[in-house]
Image (cartoon, rainbow, N blue to C red):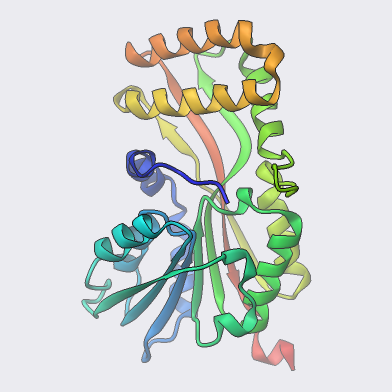
Length: 277
């Protein structure tokens, strides 16, 4: 799995929080049990930003199980979750370092909700299919947020924007050194289809970053990563990409750039017991 620097994860957290699809929370709250502890597994939790956002928006006693491969990130995440839920009920968290792509239904026994943020686009088709199967067979819900969908809108527009976006999207769909073919911008569609085929109810929502002049540092780091990935995918872009990036960075620093980076959120509710019967 791809590793991300904590500084980048913290920098993007306010934009993530503003983008998350709050309209998915009411149907999620209706599904979760009212009079018993809610067990939530956060896959690829990073610094814990999703837990910090979600725990205080859900009622009831919550037990979070945080999964990541990075022990330092797990330590940060476990220490930073809020201590109380929406209704004042207690929230606690434990950390488990493990391979989230190996989770199966038996591992999710007793889990009420599986969550993840900015994860699906880093997975393969087989890994998403396995995750969907595990979640549905375990009978839990899933809230899978902020997966890139490949659409970027920069204002003012530049003639090179489409070429950079196409190369970046191709990079997100690349075959990794260990032979994994990532889904990138196709991940939300693939996941929705996989869950739907298993009989789950899938609710989709847009969750776009909307970066304005007051987010120049986030714009800078995002631009450097976006263009850098595009050039890594298509090295022949480098001569024009260097000039393009400098032009865009100057605009960001001057407060002249706006960016909308589209993501997709999925809420998955398991098949009803009546339907399963």
